[in-house]
Structure formats: C-alpha cells, structure tokens
Amino acid sequence: MIAAVISLAALVVVLAGVLVSRSGFRLGRPRAGVRRVLVPFTGGTLDSTVLDAAIRLAQAEAATLVPAYLLLVPLRYAEDSPLRDEVAVALPLLEAVEHAALRAGVPVDARIEKGRSPTHALSRLWDEEQFDRIVAPAPNGRSGGFTAKDVTWILAHAPAETIVLKPSPNGMQHAA
Image (cartoon, rainbow, N blue to C red; front, side, top):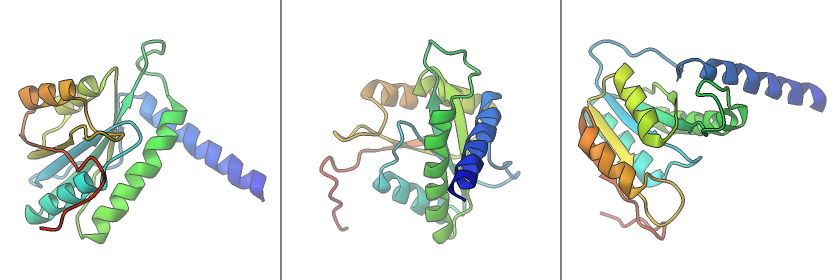
C-alpha cells in the first residue's frame, strides 16, 4: 500500500515536471474582462501577511488572485529542464494559497513560471499575461521576499500598479 502511494506521488511529480518543462505551467486560463491580482513569490515561502493582503485586495476588487511561483533554473541546467524537486516544492505551496483564497471566496488562477532569476521569470510572465495589480513581498529579515535589487527592478518595470509589502521582521502582526 505504501509503495503504491509513493509510486503515485512520484508519478504526479514527474507529470508536473513535464508540464513545467514547457514554456510555463498554467493551472487555469484567464477569463476575459476579469480583474487579476498577481502575487509572485519564490524560495519555497510566501509570507502570510503578503498573502492575506493580496486576498483582501482581490476581494475588494472582485478580482482573480494569480499566485505565481517563480521557479529559478540554475545556469548549470538548460532553461527547459523539468526541475522535479522544485516543482514538488511549488505545487503544495500553490495549493495552500489556493485553499486560503477559496476560503475567502476569491477565485484563483495559479502559475509556475521559470527563469534564471526572479526578475527574469517575472519578465517572462509579464510578456505572456496582463495583470491589474501586483503585490510583491519585500525582504523582511526572514526567509522569503524579493531582494532590494529585485524590488527596485519590479518597481521600474512592472506593467501594472504595484504594491511592495514588507511584513514585520519578527513575524508579529499589529492589529489595525
């Protein structure tokens, strides 16, 4: 029984890797005329403060939340490499984001986009799709978030209104 579960899990990871090995993985198709809020992240984490803010923004604008895991392809690999281990990290994170958004009544259209750097992956995503808002996590002293250099690039090149959110470095959230 355990061997069957492990085999099934391995098959799912391989199939996901095949999907990502193409130009980019798309869990759904954007619907015409629907507002879209992009929340890009990488490194295996998305701060809950940033996710909550993106969900609230999508709710307020009756928009679809587009969480995008930016999968970084090291230079030692071809750009179209499947990167099964990284996909195995990304899929559960995207699923957790989807569950949080759906609990709040927000539709989700998740993505995995590959690139040599976070900004390269974002550039590729922006070339393919349009977004009405972007919520980007800033560095906060813990793991996760874009670097200061990445945030500067995002603000200079973003094709839509952009919010950069820096969560509290100690993980404490203040009540409003």
